Amino acid sequence: MLSSALTSVVASIPSPAVSYIDLGPLRIHFYALCIILGIVVATLITNHRLTRRGAEPWVVIDIALLAVPLAIIGARIYHVLTHWGFYFGAGANPWNPTQPGSVWAIWEGGIAIFGALIGGAVGAWLGCRWTGIRFWTFADALAPAILLAQALGRFGNWFNQELFGWPTDVPWGLEIDPDNAAFPAGLPDDTLFHPTFLYEVIWNVLGVIVLFVLGRKLFFRWGRLFAIYLIWYGAGRVVWESIRIDPSEVILGLRTNVWGAIAAIVIGLAILVVQSRHKGIEPSPYRPGRESHGADALQSQGDFVDVSEPPASTVASVPSPQAP
Image (cartoon, rainbow, N blue to C red; front, side, top):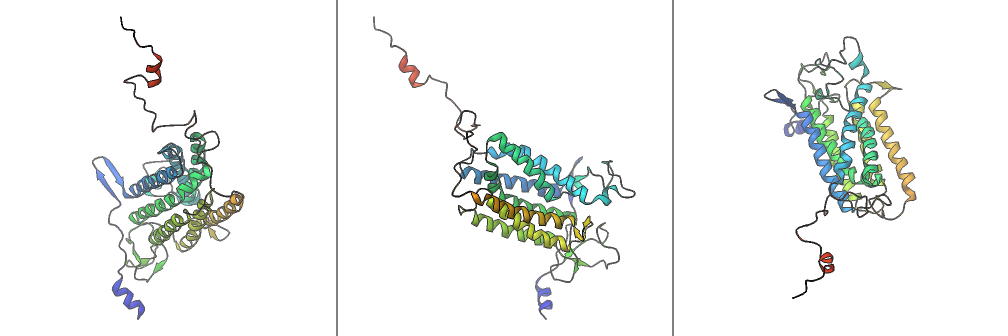
């Protein structure tokens, strides 16, 4: 009876009929737009949070110039390595960018957040060394922002009709086109599937709220807020990955992304333990000697000098002309 009542209230979730639009010779994939929107939102939030910690406004851009490209590269490499059979199996064309299933065809989907975290972490560390920002200060400022970006990015999976879960009869089941290459063979055309993209969106948004609340407490500095992000996100991914049906490499009975989620939890716990030695607030978002008022610091705000008249000290040092 309860199931019937829910069915009358909640309809199944339709998948978008199109996943891209053509503007002349340019094809724009909604998947890419979701990723780009996530990057923009994450940059804005991280800038706000980092500035409140005392960093120079928009120093996050300098860090992102390295972190974002390396994150995308790492995400693609991780995905290809964990779907080896798809890209390098019989009949595959992995190196031909004009053929479906190419390792270069990132517009078809196929980037992995765990690879993005690895590549992005390397890029962020390099960017922090470049700008003088403390790496863990940046990581804590980024934590809720990256989780929100991941929530926005998951809508790209919805547009691409990919990474859905097991068949289900729940009222909120996801509709998938039966001619979709990922549609399991032998199932009726009207089969519904668990909308794992939506589950993760909801979980991530809840996590953003939790991180914003915890971020107000002094304890969650020195990288500890980022550790909570890893634990929260990893715990959710263990569940979603366990019910997804897309092909993936299996190691010791578990999908590679489940192992990745477990690794995220373990790393998060390790950060909490290691960083517990730090007490109180961070003295500065900058590494010692790299403060924003230092001689070598980047000062894009406030470096403008009005040269329309000499400084007052210069004027005072010039003798006044004597009257004849």
